[in-house]
Length: 406
Image 1: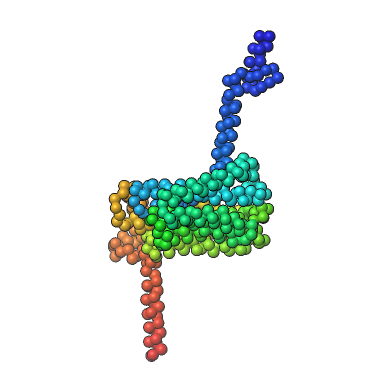
Image 2: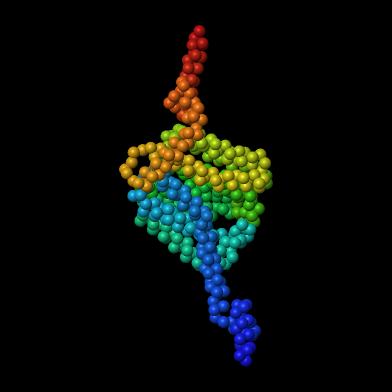
C-alpha cells in the first residue's frame, strides 16, 4: 500500500496531471492553474483593447498631442490640461470603437479580417461591451468637460456621435461613409489645439492640421478598402471599391486627394504658419506619395494599393514632425516655461543643423555676390511668386497697349 502510494505521488509529480492512479500533489497543480488564470486575464485585457481599437486610438492620441504641442503654449503649466485632453480623447475614441463593434458584430462575423474581434469570438459579451463603451464614453467626456473647455468637450462628443452614429449607419448604405469617417479622424488634432488655446476653433493652424488629417485618411482608407474589397462585400458594406469592377473610381479618388494633400505645405508656408523650408521638404515628402498613388492609378492591383497604404503609415508622422519643426510658433516671444523652452531650443537646434545641409545655404548663399541674400532661395522666391507674376502680367499688358497705340 505504501509503495503504491509513493508511486502515485512520484507519477503525479513528474506529469503534473491527474491520472487514474491518484490525485497529484498540490504543488504540481498550482502552476498550471496560475498559468491558465494569467492567460485568461491577459486574453480579457487584449479583448478590451481590441474592442476599443487600441491601435486606431493610439493614432488619435498622437494627432491630439501634436495639435496641443503645435499651439506652442506654456506646456509645463498646461500639463494637466494636456493630460485631460489626451486621455479624454482616447477614452472617447475607445467608446466610439466599442459602439461600432456592437452594432456591426453580425457583419464582422462574415468578414475574414474581423472574425477575431472579441464580440465575434465570444471573448466578450454584448453586455460587457456596452458597459465598457458607456464607462469609456462617460469618463472621456467628464475629463474633457472638467479638464479642458466646452469647445473641446463638444468636439469629443461630436466624434462619438459621428463615428458610432452617422459613419456606422452609412457603412452598409452609402459609399460616402468614408468621407464621414475622414471627418472623424480630422477632429482629434483640432481638439488638441482648442484645448491648448482655450477653445480657439478657427485658427489657421488648427484648420491646416485638420485638413491634413482629412486628406491623409482618404488615400489611406480607400487603399485599404480596395485591398479588402471582397471582404467588405462579403460583410455587406457599401465601399467604393466594392461598387466597381476595375478600381477606376477608387484610384481616381486616391490620386485626387493625394494631390490636395501635397498642396498643404505650400498653403501653410504662404499663410505664414510655417517657414519656407516646410514647403521645400513637403515637395520631397509628397513626391513619393504622389508617385505610388500614380502607380496605383496606372495599374490597379492589390500590390500597388498596399504600397499606397504602407506609404500612408509613415507619411503622417513624418508630416507632423516637419510641421512642428517648421512652425513659426517657436519663433514667437512667450512667457518662460521650461518645457516649452526645451522644445523650442530643440527645434531651433534641428533647424540650424538642417541649414547646413541646404543647397541654398551651402552654395548659392555663400557665393561672392549673394552673401546673406535670402531672395536667392527657390522657396523664398516661390513665396514672392504671386507678386512677381502680377508685376510681369501688368508689364505685358502695358506693352501690348503701347503696341496697339503705335
